[in-house]
Each structure stands twice: as structure tokens, then as C-alpha cells.
Image (cartoon, rainbow, N blue to C red):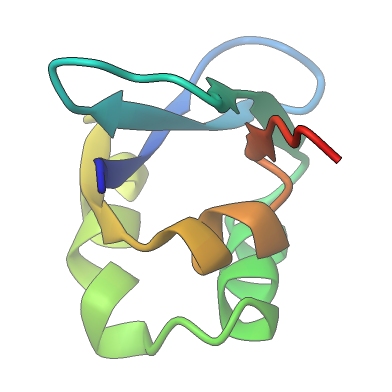
Length: 92
């Protein structure tokens, strides 16, 4: 099973907070990472809370982004799907 990383950074888009997922595994089959944009960091934290991710897991990432630095932390497949940043291919 691959490892998933939630990546967060800020750019100059009208919805400047860019979230994505990195899929870390030598062979990645059946997964596709997506990009999602947020208007505010509060929108990001709300989405993380709704996905069931505790604030102690994402707090330092949010702090880094507030300071203009990109950040990432580990999430699982279910959390990535709840955040709408991971598409899973099915053979059904």
C-alpha cells in the first residue's frame, strides 16, 4: 500500500491555497492525485477537520504556509479521498 502525503502551498491565484497529494510508492497503479484550491486557510482547516484529521497532525503545516513556506504531512487513502485530492481507479 502506498504512502500518501498532503501537500499545501500558497500562490497568487484568487483561491491561493493549493492542496495536492503525493503518492509515494515505487509502483503506483490505481491512484491519481488531484489538485484542490481553497480561498482561505480557514477553508483548508475546515476541510481537514471534516476529513477527520486532528489539528495536531496539520497544525505545523498550516503554520508553515502562513509563513510562506510549503508544507506536507502523511495522510491515509481514506482521508485523501475525503479531501477530494485522490482519485482511485476501480475495475468494477
